[in-house]
Image (tube, rainbow, N blue to C red):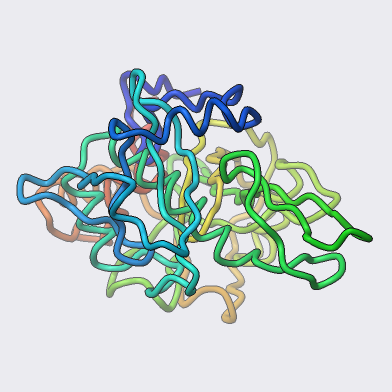
Length: 301
């Protein structure tokens, strides 16, 4: 596994105390909603940054009267909150220019705070109605639950993350990388796919690689994980060895997939550090766990 203190992973390392004990204590939450409390400013789901490239915070008085407030955690003794507006937040659920800019300028702790807030606010916006009976839901436990308002139902709903396997597949000194249609030109990355109900992480890795590239793998191991708030995934970084090498591309998922040498990967990682493309391909940005997996593979020797 990767040591996070030596290899920072984007959207990890929030400095806020999640303070779970406060969420279920209405009196404690009310006590935190004082002049000392901070409200994370957001433009829809996008971050708002100060001129010097930090998260911008305001007071709870800045929230719209009909908004709900979700408790992000404690910064020392101060409560930190985000706003869930009555209208659906503008912008794409996927990473846009403002989010990519935030990834390039925010410190690790602040980026993690924004990522958690984005996932939570987006979840509330998508769960205003009960999935059991269709009646409206209301915010509970400081924003870490929604409860159906129907007395005959009363179902409780909790924020969820979607597990996604992302895997570096190796064979005799080469790695398997692919590119999706939405990737910038010449960019390649490790393969990835959602974990389906009823399968293990290892099974998901094997299934996704076989489906997307026609490659059978063995010896799947966990390397590291990354919260990815677009809209709310947990990227589970893995490594596997290929048993077969002939590629058969699923063209509904990938534009291309190829084997790349260690020299290709080293060159691509060095190039992305300069903001350039490598000779063989363009590597994922440093904020992506795919980049971390490639660097781990190179450092591993």
